[in-house]
Image 1 (cartoon, helix red, strand yellow):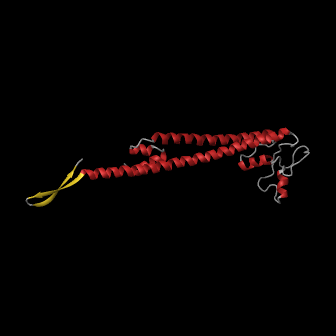
Image 2 (spheres, rainbow, N blue to C red):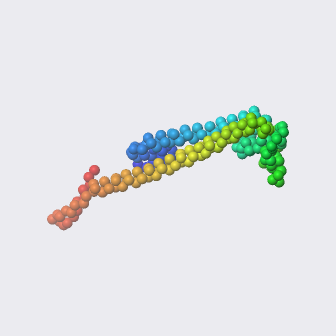
Image 3 (tube, rainbow, N blue to C red):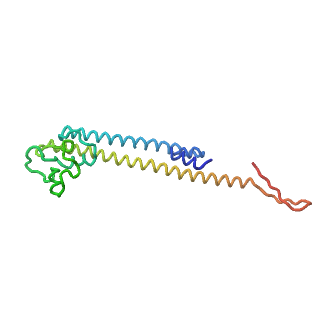
Length: 210
């Protein structure tokens, strides 16, 4: 058996290296674990993409922004500030940081330092005097939180896929070493040398059993 081939098989699909070496005890466990991790990986990735699409669509309907960018940082910013460039309507108790542009100016930055001040980067959730606008902002933040959770799940799944392969490769190396040692020991047992005393002089007889 070839160790590099066994390792390559385990890297491609954990469990295949063990199967190749004839050790099938945990083959199904490795394979089904890998299948579950691939399902989790693709599921979390596409769920996250769906959340980004939902966030953009929701912002277009309720925050007065046309075709917002899919940038995670920009969408998170929309959840942190009520508007960019002024809130429609009068707020009886305005928050000093509810307008992104004003917050940037107070910090000594240009209003277009990170994003251009244009139609596709301007939003307005509406006055905080209207409870519905606050509810919409909260719902938007929930969508973005789901996206962040999905990205975390995606990264964990990728890490678990790698770990599953590392464990499988180490297991293959242990199996290969063990079987090689057993083979060497068995070959030693089959090789016997006997002393042989003959009239012409002492000698030895080599007996090889196979």
